[in-house]
Length: 456
Image (cartoon, rainbow, N blue to C red; front, side, top):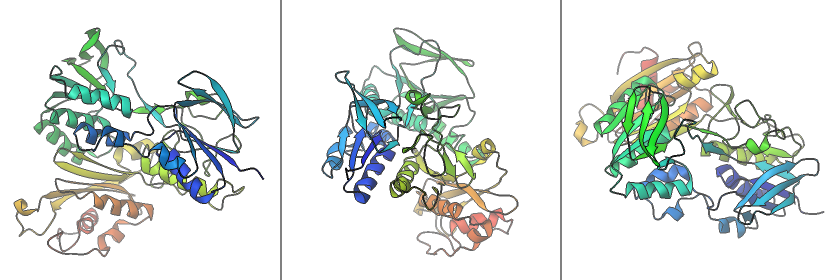
């Protein structure tokens, strides 16, 4: 019997994990990964570390090197763009981006991990020079050069999500004047509830970031290169614009072949199969079943793609998989200057978007007993819990402090994934040692507060 041919499209987190899992489970398979880009495979979530000179080298900021997989028996072809799926004959058409030639490659199984592309605002002037995007190897090196250019005095960031916050912090640390713009009225407003975004907004302002929120970008102005961003609340003079205004699925090439929703996300069934036989899809270009929302939602995280890839590799040759993909909670973390936070599951914004009714509770205290001064490692800590108002089942939450309490976010994620209630969390058996925490652990206290119990 011929070796089964498995093609993976995209050297993203999902593509990488797929090949790793397939090599382990099916050592006799013929596995080929195609990547349209030149650099395999830049880790954009490490871009801020690169911009702040906290990495060994820009060429090390990657998920893997091609040789890592080639040595194990896979084929990794960069500068090869998959342009079409020929499902009737089970081949893909691939264009060599260096010489423009095209070739068809046969597959028995095809995994799409095509990912997303950053949005470029469709406004007048978006073709001016010095309007950058915050994603990928090429943009990372261009931004780095501008941060080191003394002629660049002012940088305007568009988008107050994770990527925009990272761009703003890196730019301030490089000594630039920074203005942060967004159409929403709170920084990180789609990730955190207002009690926490108020703290983040003050931290950004205190660190010299000018916030202009709730504004609409109308155009970019300049003579050849951008010199101002025009908004409905006035103009912002600038030397450089970094756009971090969300992403969109990189699925234009699939229209008319693979079923897409009205936003361009690839439709998959509970087993991650597309409408085409033996064609699967994972990662940011798909919607994933959210455990908290109990429906498919957009969660563009490396952790999601890798879990999907692990499931898919285990079931790719099963005619009837024993179980569907179990879904994810969706957890992430970020530092904003002196603050660190982690969030998981739903917040009021994402719950509203999914039509899920929730209650919330915001709790603040000190990390350790009151007899330890703040200057001796006892800073304020905050916990936000999101839960079902009827059953008290935990649906999400976040932790925030100048002390790194982000590991508590993993505890909340586990609680959400396993359907724990406020009552469960209020009594959960965590350790106590005054060098680390309080007599009741931080999450115990937050749950007790949510239940209306007297403050400990």
